[in-house]
Length: 343
Image (cartoon, rainbow, N blue to C red; front, side):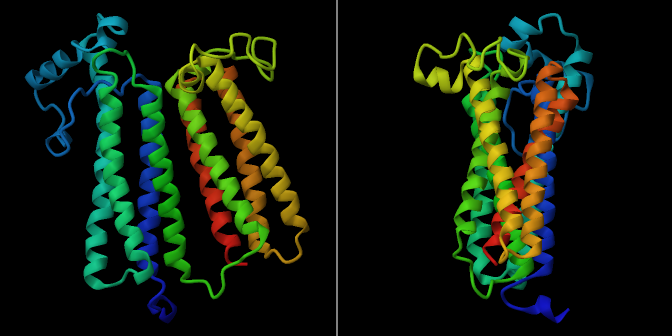
């Protein structure tokens, strides 16, 4: 017990941050299901406080449904949908937004308590303020994303979806890293080996690959070129490239899927090389070696799930599993990068 009274560490603070990270994971999972079921535009207003209460009467449901019937998604894709169908997509989006509110409350209330009790290590206080601000920004970006699909589009803009999901991934990484710091305290000496830089480069690569996956999701690019390992019988898809460089990067289905595949190949090779190097590095602690192997296993599993998701036509449950896999890869890569700084 006395070890947790050190000024540079706090077990309760670590548990709190781990719990919030788990809530962020849950929000990503529900957000993925919301997107895959086409439910994200069912709530057409942003009401951070009063929106927590769902429709409680037939009249309230009819009012919400009437708002949905004015947007392009209903007029062009879902015209004829009944109230029962609307309720099924409404509950997905409402649950996603509710989880966002719970994440905010689960962070802000304990944060205020720990500040009052002065239980947060001083070196982590500024970081927690940053996490709070990032959480608030995430909510604002979420509405910015939704608003892109309410007037001229039948879905949200892919680049805005990528920004929204990317912020969630970044928040998860920072929560996990800060929780590990709170649990273990300040290291006696930080590592300056090549592993420190290499592990951070790998983590950045895993994060970039997650963003490329978000672009695939935003463009429904998993619904084209469902053969593997080739795309339409070729390594590079026959219709690669959009009318502009930005369209190629963010809006062309074949292009964004090709980029995501290239990222997967690079990340898979890097994970295997890192695991082999870790097993041969004599000065690398056993725990760090194990984490390197865990990263390689997570990347391999995620690659296999991605192939299965693509070739099976992107069923909702498998799409959600693939998104969970992305978070778990980031978790493993984050933990490994954090650990090798303490060799």
